[in-house]
Length: 433
Image 1 (cartoon, one colour):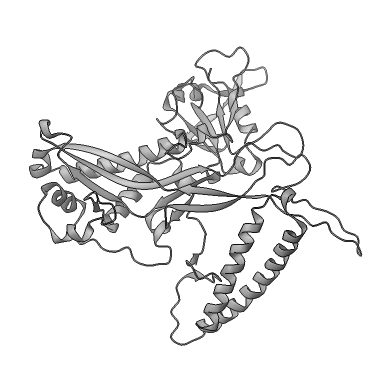
Image 2 (image 1 turned 135 degrees about the vertical axis):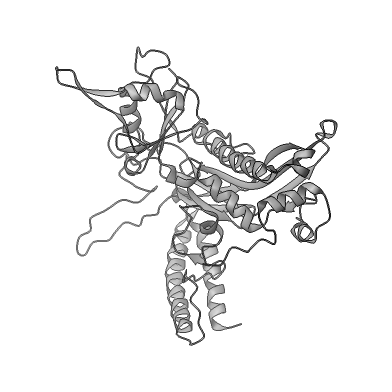
């Protein structure tokens, strides 16, 4: 084993041990564990510096080829610039190292769908068989899966604005600060600014961390079509592609907003961290007034006010268009909701309409959300299966596309700020009226 590999193995062992220690709550950590953590941190910094020097020397070699990757002491998986993919296109999720998306053996998605529908032998399908599933399904070629994914992404609300991680296995652990109260002047579960005299001694501090676990949950998209259309229809390939794309966008959005967390992602509306702002006393049923919007905006946590988005059911549009701020006694009013070139805004933040929220008057018919605080994990693999059994008597062919994903808010509960007792959160919804 080379010296570089030995150092990387040493760094991995130190990091694994430090991960175990930092997840211990501060009040339960012993003095010996605290000392061990400080020593490990110092040693990790030293070993990381040694590894970086070795990697830089390697880059000076004439046969070195740039990879577009940052230096990673672990050398387990390349650490790509940008961390999680905040613009979660297929390439940004799974090909951030600059590698090319593999070209499909099929001419296009239509040819792939037609061959699957025919049920005939084709060596390209044999090479696409998902051996590990035991279901006889076929892996959707990467080039086609990337097209389906990127097209569906355009119609989604949550995912394009969320923090998205590619999942390389069935589980993904994401570290997060356990920061639910700043009333004592501490941030991130235990960090506070302290002033020190020239010869004074600082007080040791430790942040409170927790590990979020994303489990890749299996989701299926079903599509029925007649045997005649599959075999002879000129529009079959476009039909099945459109069905898959629309189901992808609508299905993922619905669960990222409404999921229960039991076998599905934990949706924003069902999360403990989501604050429900009550209606104004005496407010009419199925109404939306300016005071509601102000209340929602005020309960957003500070950084979220500059990056939050409004999401509302389209049945709120008549009410939103009538919202205004009266000025003076002359009757002059300024509209709250405005649009420019088809882009809607309210209080300076974008407004997006989604059928995945309740109708006007229901709890959560309008929300104000900082989607960057919603964490998603997406598996690369996508699989397609075909069966005639469900529609045998109607001469139908059934298709389903299987994918794996998970999501949950990064926050466990709302935050109590340093001053005051009114909690704030990245996710705020309006109560039923």
